[in-house]
Image (cartoon, rainbow, N blue to C red; front, top):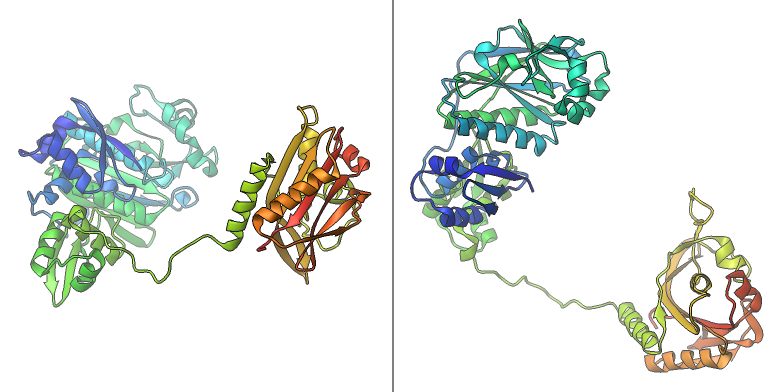
Length: 546
């Protein structure tokens, strides 16, 4: 979540009396946010990404004063008068940043701390909601230094005096050498090297979008009239940014005017500051919050969260503040009513259920088998499901099968199929550790795959192997019998032939009269294929839902 640094003294001056650090932290927490740290001069506020209006002291003070019922200003409107400025949008910006909005604030009184707060907001807004200026970028100007007509277009590599500079520089030089140019150059890279997006008036470039403003239009604490340009890739986003800034300037005592944006034959005026409404049935709010609220109380709670509200029949009609971008549907309003009511006063309810949960039967079997193998001194391995025909069949000394799950378009020859059994993976593990101390006892319990009737089928196998100078058939038989007896499984052992094992030293495991696995002494050729230098025995059992 975004974190913003706020000047504590300035915030308290906006809040007025009745706030100390403890009450501030308590009320911020009740609103659902968190003060991460605070010192004598500043505090660090963590804000959810859907509330960009709180990325400044002005916005936080507004929310807290609403929450404390210290204000009755819920909506911000602009008189329907002629636009204070016009911006002509040239078609050349369509492929880079096609949208622009504007705000004019006249008669504003800026001090160092209020100006710093507004600048903090614009920077944090562009970094978070504006996606590091890719989606939205904001530039502030001294309106008195702007000389119409104003246009937003892609310009050639012209010169201007960049913000903080004293000499003219070409746009390409600013892009290549200034810190902001280097940081944000990728945003306009698709526009090519010959043309650059700018806001310009009759005197030249006022803003190199979205890189750096002009020194000529710089805003200072003595500035009384401000023009803000907002450019981006989303028309909705730039227009909402204009409304948030319009509300902020009104809170600072300015008279806010609209800017006419001329997209060819289409004209848009920003900030629109149009009041929107949304209604919620009180019964639904009470049902979802879980407490009886009542018509009288719900109006107070709406005011507490910054909404002007009225009762219309059995519905509560909310007037949505223009600076709120997070209110999408009724559920957002119900959530705010719950916040205003106080979660600490809402008793949790047990969720209704018809049956209890539990582990699947296969999971219980797997856990029990794993515990038994570990208890017998075996170390567990986990290998990849992916393998290849040579490792799965050839090195193990068995014939290749057709009923395998083959990967389409494998990137390497090492991963061309899904494994059909576990022993090749375990033997590869033992070959890699052939120089470690002996004996070594390893096992794996996981899925293997095959194709039955044109459909892939997965099942759980348990494979184990022991390597050492004294490894023999009877040792693995004891492991198999110990496992199956401990599992409570009925089984039988019969003579069996398997190409991976020495003939006459391999046995079949049967369960319910069907083949379920095998064990025995591994053939020397197989051991050589995997780089195993000592005798080894192994077993593999299908334990799917047994």
